[in-house]
Length: 173
Image (cartoon, rainbow, N blue to C red; front, side, top):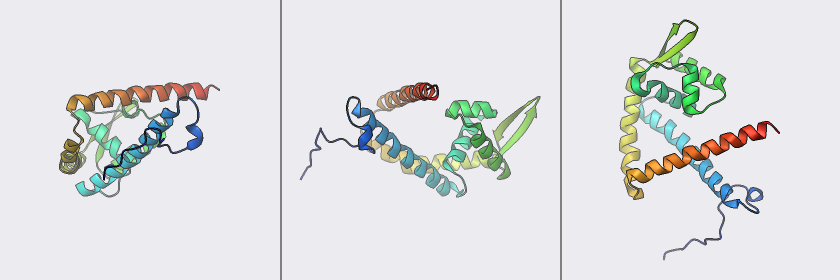
C-alpha cells in the first residue's frame, strides 16, 4: 500500500517558528538540521573507516580543505573557504592535526601556511575511497543528474548567503 503524504503537513522542528507567512522556511531549516547532523555523522564514520577515529567533523573539514588542490593554506584561507567566523575553532583544529602529524606548517614572514603531510594526504585518499564505495554508489539511486546536483549545490550556497546577511542584520539589532 502506497501512502501519499499530506501536502498540508508541515515537517518542522519548531512549530512556533512555522506559524504564519513563510512557514516553508521552517521546513527548509529542519531539512538543513537533519542533513547537517547526518553529514557530520557520515564524515566521522567515513574517516573512522579510512583509519582515523579521533577527528571531529570540523577537523575532517579542515584536513580536506588544507589538502584541497595541494596548495598551502593560511588560517584565514581555510576559514573563508569553509565560511567559519570563529577562527579559534579552526586554529584549534589545525593544532590538533599538526600534533597528529597530518599537517605541517611553515612560517613565511608573519603568516603561517599549512599543508597536508604525507600521512595526511594518504588519509584523505583513504577517505575518498571509502566515500566512493559507500556514498557515491548509493547516490545513483536518487535519480538526479549531475547537473541537478550542481543546481542544488548552487541553491544551498545562495541560501547560505541569505542566512549570512540575516545574521549580520540580527547582530546590528
